[in-house]
Length: 312
Ligand code: NAD
Image: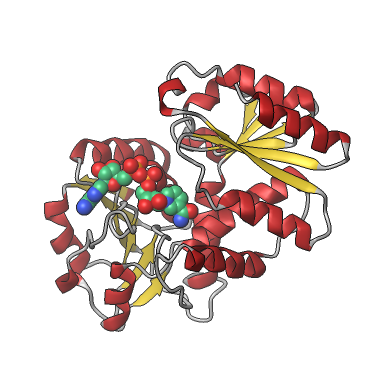
């Protein structure tokens, strides 16, 4: 599988380029490859970011270990790994960053001295973006003592880990599938202490938001393909902050509604940018320019005609 992609990788590496790739299913429209390629080009570095888009029918029997072997053998710098391989890849790695080990999920594999090291830049990307927009690196940090999170899937696990790592004393996670929020709360409770994470159903969310400092939204609701809001408009208030994970469009219905009531908002494109910033740094040793990459992703999303990006 991926003979043409490996041929390209080999040719580009022979030409002196750094080569990386994204492995996942249904990723042909991912904005990560153009973000990496453009930022490396801006820095004058010969770099190629390829896409290994695994067909749904081949996902179950994909030889992921063999794919990693081959990528390392031809001299690639590393791989980003996305759905549905973020957990499966763990079995094929030599080492994990402490955070990836605790989360049990890897989105970035770096090949280094014959070893494969797994990292998770989903959580670090969300955390960095949060610190810049709402936290220690912002002009006016928000309170994050008590936070409600909607969505306990792949993105939800990373952002919940980020909030607890940043010091949230109590995170309440709700999901349309209560088993998912329960499982995530159990995983994170074992790391951060059972009292710091609770879970519930979406029916709980209304009452929980009333006493919370802020809301992290990590369900697909609000994407162009899933319009609407998972948070009821009546729960929004000016002293509540909203951190969004959805970023296509950048201004989701939740972000627009929260802004209309005067709440502070953080859009989801920042997480997408900073996970790429952290991965590009790990692959290349470059120091990416996050502001330039933000401008670029907003151009890319605007060109998709999903919505008009506005400043956070
Ligand atoms: P996922 O399918 O793994 O998880 C989504 C979760 O949301 C599921 O557990 C589902 O039960 C729950 N859910 C769905 N509708 C709900 C509702 N109305 N109320 C409560 N829970 C509900 O998906 P994911 O990979 O976690 O992605 C979620 C969203 O995050 C997507 O829109 C994706 O594009 C976005 N995302 C953004 C970034 C980024 O960098 N900004 C990164 C990853 C994912």
